Length: 140
Image (cartoon, rainbow, N blue to C red; front, top):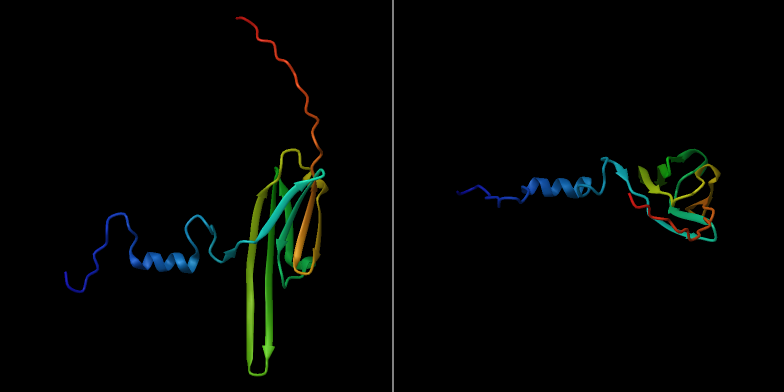
């Protein structure tokens, strides 16, 4: 067995591990070249608020926000070029995130604001009146 690497059953081959590092762990990033967006979210005072870190973008042309069947989808593209004396650097990529909205959220009334590299999306969620109802059981 000289010159050969023996692989344990159930363990990926070494090149597979390097592929994970380059493209992301399986199940974490579904599409190569697509990056996740860091978000924080909270629900309070009849509003669902999502804050997303998106520095270096133009929200008027680089951001797309959609709501379909209770799922908020956020997609952004960044392309930035920095030029210094003897060097030019490009930073670019596509970022995406989908979040299920809370039950009763009014996605068609959502608003968005971009300030200091943070996108804030606010969705009204009317508080449902909950009451107790007694259900009679019939004997069949």
